[in-house]
Length: 434
Image 1: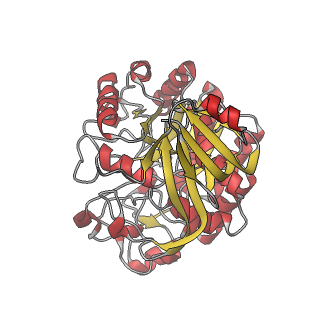
Image 2: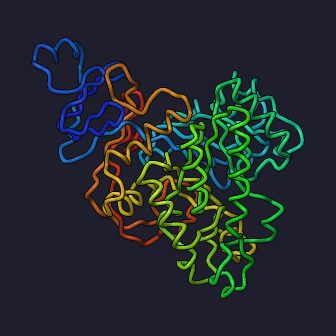
């Protein structure tokens, strides 16, 4: 499709563009940016062209989520690749990275090909699979990382846990460095976490729930950075939640190490003090932390230490989340609410400019993954998100496209509405149900 996006406010940090202008799409790629003469328009659009008026809206390179759980194969009652990617499209994402803790685990080339085959059939957006670090995520034997990369994996991760055998993890990092892929690290010392289910602190004591200390995360963050320093691996620290994680990343960057970090919307929006009752919709891993941690995470996003905003979208069945915090599974959904929460908590408070938000949700994630995208310069893929930063709405989990309704944000009024999601020049949201 040839597409002419008119009068939108283009936000493209990679190109340094922050201006109202037109965008011309031809055969799935950006053909031109700016104002064209009538003759130029005719040369670009010899065939029919669809016009899309983006007046008053922001036009951005498509968002890329480095951290989702699509649950398929094995846990389709929670989510499928179809429902999860449609939810992502509704949230403005043109690409997502599904984590490998499926059943069976995505730990071999065959499983990577399986995920990609389902996505080819069911997904309206790009799917970049992440392979497991170890076979079965058991932490005992390194997976066939090279084979998975050849099959289409874009990174490796043991997400949901850490590889506790440091020697084994070091070998996997060496392999990742050789293959020039990123290691996406879930930092959790299983020997420290015990039966913890929420942040260790006064609220956990009040609710009678075993706590998870900051050290559970911090110890592994420090270890993984040291291993990345030794191996040269590109290390990306997932869902950072503590003040010291921010400072460890800051120090690593000052040393010139290839270390990046992400923050999820729940971790820059809520604290453990917001958990007023035994409500498992507030249970995620890592847990909601204290006020000082949240402020440091927000500052890290503002000053550029923290590179990306991801969701850790983790849908669960309603019955599972109806249990006590102590017994329910970790995780909340986030694909459909992350943009509005970021606009509300970061942009409207002055911590991030709209251009910097795009950098955290599109440009930097593409660079971390090493995939094409993150900019709307001519020749780039026409993966585009169009949104209204000023419109408000009330989050309603009953309207979610995701199968998962497990969110603590139900009923919250927020700013920021996704108007269109475009992949390779084709509008994939709003959905065409015909």
